[in-house]
Image (cartoon, rainbow, N blue to C red):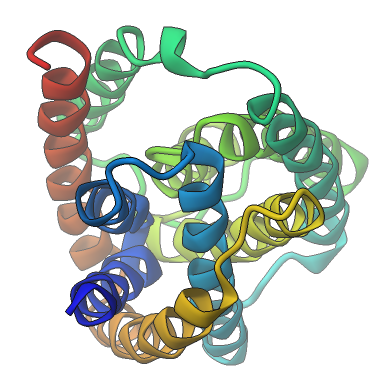
Length: 252
């Protein structure tokens, strides 16, 4: 029964994550609810072991239909990998609990900005090119990669927001780009957790298959309905993240 519950959570997480990020909002709480006495690093490792496959498949699907800016994104993915590796190592040493109280306010600022700027992310007009775009993308990858390895909630949504706000992408292209970087950060964290013995592979592999199915369905829906649809889902996911992280930080 435990495996069934977390596998269904993984399928739903893959679906949501493929559209706009935020799959960890579903899967991580499910893992903590089903295995409340397990070391957090192990549950984070299982989460990464499942989600890395979904983000990789979503990246491949988006790449067939979206004009990915590989010259900037591949170095950014490498930076994200390095940042995530450092963050995942740190979470095996110290607790990320101090971030819990700040996260809801950061997410609230992201939501309010998105709601106020009604045209934000509706048009794809990249703000940089060449080395400037690569440098900006690498900064995003490094910082959010570290955050993803160390703590994680909302990483995909933060990737999407920064690609829209800073680099000038529309929500569809931002989501496609975020999937590539998120695959890199998930892989780095997974390798570190596996090296430290914090992955239950008999759970992670079954959950990975479900995550891929959800990812395929979510990517197809995003590609079918475009940037406007992704923006709506983004607002919904960030709103839910605010409620969830706020409850975890101040009500528990």
